[in-house]
Image (cartoon, rainbow, N blue to C red; front, side, top):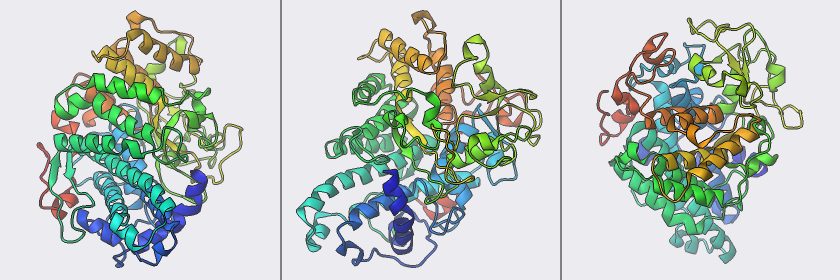
Length: 536
């Protein structure tokens, strides 16, 4: 689908941004940057418009506005603090024990990485707002594709058949946005296509209600989605729905107080049987052509990036430019400018320690650059302190660089099979049925073998603590770490401290209410039905 996105994204997202962003965001109290309010009926005279408008719904995962990478289509949301994947990566990764951002004058960054955030943090508003826009876009697409509207437009039978799948995809995108809102903020305003478009404040839904909504929606649309790997690259299918459900069930104790590990194993089994396979080369998953290489057999759902036609300050653009070392100036090897962003990103010591020992000398997941560097960061602004990392790159599997030296071609693998293998193993170890320890061991060792790690794990070594550490080694910088630490009761409190946790260089305990972020102050002000999270 990347070619399809490249043709459609900037054209249709521009059109949508100019013609229907007002109507579809009013129900979430989001203010668009222009004053047009309805989708034009002229648009739908061409029956191909339905697929194009669906592309606009997907586009919100990648783009922030209609006038280039620095533009925003939502008033009050800056492009740099509201790109979907970037804010997700910040809130899940920068807040935990893996990543440090050098430039603490950048809006919101200091508070997130030092765990001292408040409801005024712009990154929180960016994530809450951008996810809400995804809900709004999906709702508007569903309003425009009802049977009544299709009848009135005399839409052909063949296109109507496709629209059944399109509508299921839109509902999945909405469910995914609510999944992120539920995980990060614990609650949100719940709205669907059945609600009024104007003068409507969505009622607040707590975690349990959001959990039920997401679960019900994904199960309801399963039959209308294409089979795993049968859709265009970058579009949702049954495998994506199963992945969100597996994630719901893996974290169910956190979300609802009830464990659902057996259900997690069930959906992991469905995904594994869906035809996916591990990419032979781990690092191919994070290269500029990961939409074309064998990586596509492992990637279940990506956030699209393209250096020419969908330029944005998304997670891969940030991580690749940011990973260029201040001392090394190794940008050319990563497919960007020689100096990159001057040492913007480094890793915390606790993450680097996971790769110590002889077994990790050849492990391809270990891309730490350590020469002439200390693993300790005593001064966050000192870009020469701390190890750097070269996991993501804007170079293809054949060695060819991406099309642009700033805006990268590398898609962000939001969901992939390697994660499923580790989810299966964890759910088995935590008492879920429908799987075996032996199969869990096979999956874990398959990941190690793929990474060229000579140390096979034995049954006695396969513990919950091992799984948490292995998830860090396999899935670092993929927007999972905060969620993982919360599930293992190691994010808040003092069970596990890392560098700069709680704004202390060696780390200190942080309060338990930090397991969810505060509802942003701007969101509280715009919707009187929303209430602050406890402790904020």
